[in-house]
Picture 1: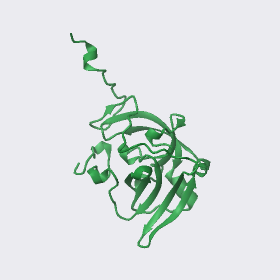
Picture 2: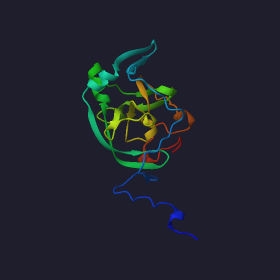
Picture 3: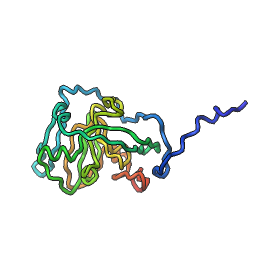
Picture 4: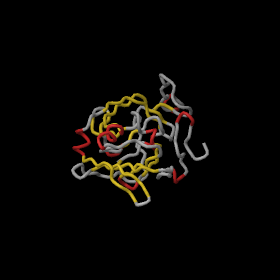
Length: 204
């Protein structure tokens, strides 16, 4: 005998447009390349570095307490994962990249950044996609500290790109003159990752 449960739960219809090829997700799936790092906030720090022919220079550095002492930003936004789920109206709190630049006296420049993370993960993002309010370091999700499996204590959030660009367990940003592939990009993911253009893989 076949009943309605045989076909599984019907997916919800979006209340507004979502990127092509996506479906709505009620939960928050956990997708990671390796084990979840366990980070001690007592020793956690975040750095912003330049990159030049002589190596690199630290332009700004913040401890956990220093990050939380900066002006905080609340953001309600949609998320879009390359594995084709979208989650609407997620609530985040953190520090905008603009605030970090201002605090360190950094003038944004053209080019790219590489997000450096615990666990050896990296993600490349154009500078223009993390400035002017488009990028944050987030530590709170739905009013609670960001769980380790979702990138806590701090992850990068760039919600207008596919979620893999919102690198988990982020520890720093490094300026780059040239776009260089990060972790997933080396395995064939798209260098940019616009969900509205379905830029999932290289060649899309």
